[in-house]
Image 1 (cartoon, each protein chain N blue to C red):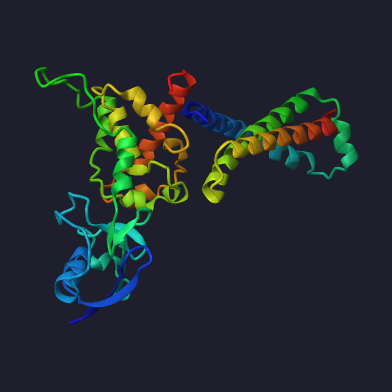
Image 2: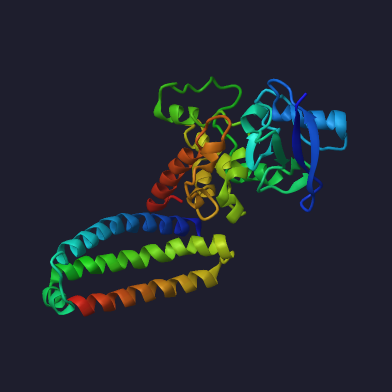
Length: 237
Length: 112
């Protein structure tokens, strides 16, 4: 049986890589490799996963230097000469081993006004949004985000400017800017303006390249830049 | 600095970039055209001195540079050196004035 040589980050921010040998199997995912290490070799290994089918966004890690969702990443696609290097996501504090602290990632969703606020109560009828309307179509292309933080880990602006809200939070804001039912548009545009908001994006496209769902946060951020610029010129910011 | 002010700086940088794109093209095309047969400094000055249209063009060029470069540098200073706050804005305002003055001096020297 052929073996994979897998270097895995162990410990906190000042930890180090430790190497493990894992049996190579057909259709093996990177998450399968990590699970094998934890169940068969070293039960103290900490990592995070839930659904195993690319829906929950909890298993993202750095795989051979790039952020990826590990449950849908086949070893065939990423192993180089039978080797893998696994580390926690970049741009987030390390809790232990492969687990990153996601607090600041989700705090930034809140800071970007990523919460829907409508005007209707449960006693009102549904508000109708035409599926073909331009706003609905713009929201559609951005709405499938699973909050895995792969884009956040891939973003060099986050690395250089820790206050930057990041691609996922801004992508979420963009879906709501296009939600005609939402009532807090002015607050949201203010939240995503300025040096820590959409204007800080350098359009490197790392988020777009790495997003496992095929979303382009860069495109949404460009839309936010236009909306924010219009509001500033009108004195509405 | 307020978020509106930061956003207006961003707009000013994009607008000045559009102006610069045009200015650089005209500038390069003019150089290539003007020196194709070889020109001395004195010959160049004899053609530029007193030319109001070219003086106006290069004044716009200088102004666009003075707006564009400091705003770009503002992000570079924050991201590479962690320099933010009022001291950075004052330093960049001084840099903008220096670019405008040095550029205006060059325009006066060539077209005045």
